[in-house]
Structure formats: structure tokens, C-alpha cells
Image 1 (cartoon, rainbow, N blue to C red):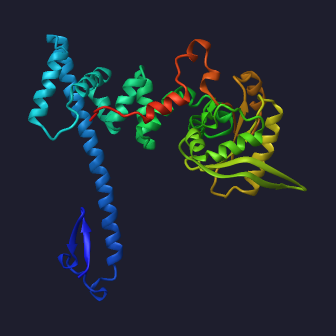
Image 2: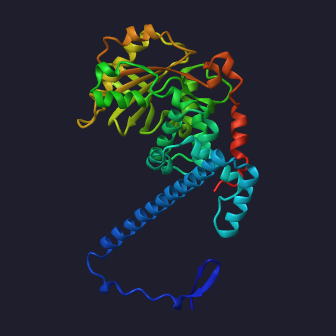
Image 3: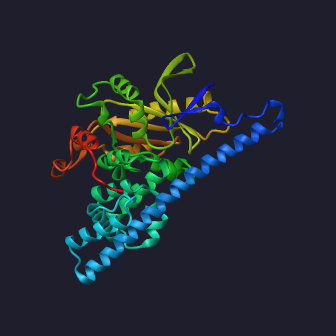
Length: 367
């Protein structure tokens, strides 16, 4: 008799009812089975999300109750310790009731005094991610922005912390572009937010690429981290993509397709600061991609020019882009965010090694 395993135990095959023969199945059985499976998967995800929302809201209620008593009656650490002891005695199977986590709940309620904001946005992300927002950020606007990104893009806590360390909130939408003049308003806003300045290629290490080809090779070697830095919606198409224009061949450094903008994005890499001459080259590439590669349903191609520098001459970039008919953005790239920060802020940022060490460390009880 054959056997199956379930949770480490052997179960005789006879314990499972035999499936009916194929002849007994209706013609649409497979389609219905597929629909039911998909519904179960969807509902399981919904239940998990609903459970997370309920837990975060419960933590907010607990924190709010502690905060109110602390303000009115002067509850101290000793009272919170006793509260933790009594709650864990009443609910022994429930995690997240340690004194440390109760203090996090109090800080959480203090950071978000309005329940509506918590329910609409903050409760949509995991508790551990909320703790990261409390620990790493001081301003509600930045916390809300990152919380929305976590909900939209499904970042783990580790990815969230890396993005905070890299200053994504401050860099997003900062590239110099001509999108307002060359794109419809809805596409202009989305495209502007899709680009940042500077781009941080810290995963290339401390050795700075000396040529465009070295930079390109390094980005392709770390394509997963590169796509994370590019942001949501970018799909990598290829490198050194051939364009046959008349009797000459041209090669694009990197070619992407943006799934939300529904258009190609040509990325050109420069190991030197911005020069107006680069704009003419990009104009040729964008026109050629539109004629040779763009599908009739695709929107016109966008260009992103990444130059090596610690801050560009924005006026020169503005003049170079002013009358250009093709949509183009210009941004810097760096291998360390510290390189582009004011001197008084450089010492406040951890090194890449310190970040990796912290991410590898064990967390305490957080729910």
C-alpha cells in the first residue's frame, strides 16, 4: 500500500478518497477548478491584509490608551511593565505584548494622533515597517510617503530601510526635465516622479567606474539592485541595443520599457559632467527608437541622461532642454550619497558596511 506524508507523519494512501475517473468530470471542470483556486488565493491574501490592518489598529488603540493615561495620570515604565505582565497572563498565545512593544505602541499613537490616517494608510503596511518609519524618520510627510510606497510596491522592511538610508524621498522627482513642455499633463507628472536626482549606485562599491562601459557593465552585473534604484515600473530591455540609421550603426547604452507610462526609456551613461552636446545625441536616439522600435500603441520614447558629477549647472541644462521637442531628463549618478551631501551631514550617515551589519542583526520582539 502506498503512503503519503503529512506534517512528518506517514498516512496510508487508503486514507485519502480516490478521485473520480476522468469520464465523470464535466467538460468545464478544469476552468471552474482554476477559478476556485484563484478565488481562494485572492481571499487568503485579503484575509492576511485584513488581519494586519486589524492588528495595527489594535496596537494604535492600545498605544493611545497608554498615552492618554500617561498624560493624565503619569503612568511610568513600571506601570507599563505590569500592564505587559497582566496582558500576557490573560492572552498567553498572543505575541507583541512585551513592555518594549507596548512602548512602541505608545510612540506609534503619539506619531499618528488621527485614527483616520492610520486606518487609511498606515495600517496597510506591516507593523515592522511601521517601526522602521518611527525609528528612521522624524517628519510625518516623509513617513506617509514611504508608507504609501511600501503598500504600492510591497517593499520588505529591509528594502524600506535601504530606501530611507538612500534618501529616496528627497531625491524623487528631482531630475531636470522638459516633461511639462513635451508630455501631456498626466504623463508629465508620472514621468517626473519616475526620475530622481542623483541616482545612487552604491552597489558598485568604492571603486568608481572610469568609463561609460565600466559603469554600464557594473549596472548590468547588479541588474536587480539597479532596477530597484530605477524604481517601480521599469523593465530592462537590453544593453548596447543596435540602431541602424542610414549607413551608420548606433548603440544605446541601456534600454528600458516603463509599464505605467507605456513607452520606451533610453538611458545614456556618462562618466563626465553634463555637456549640452549630449542632448543632440539623445535627440537622435529618441527619434530613431520612435521610428524603428516603437509599437503604434506605445507612447513616444523618453530619454534619461545620467552624468557623473556632484551637482550640475542647472541653468545650462535648462537652456539645453528648453526648445527640445523630445522628452528628456538629466540627472547625476553617484556611488555614495555622502559624496553629494553638505559636509555637516556626511558624518550622520552610516557606511554601506554598517547598513549591511544592521540588517543582518537580530531583531527583538516586535509583534
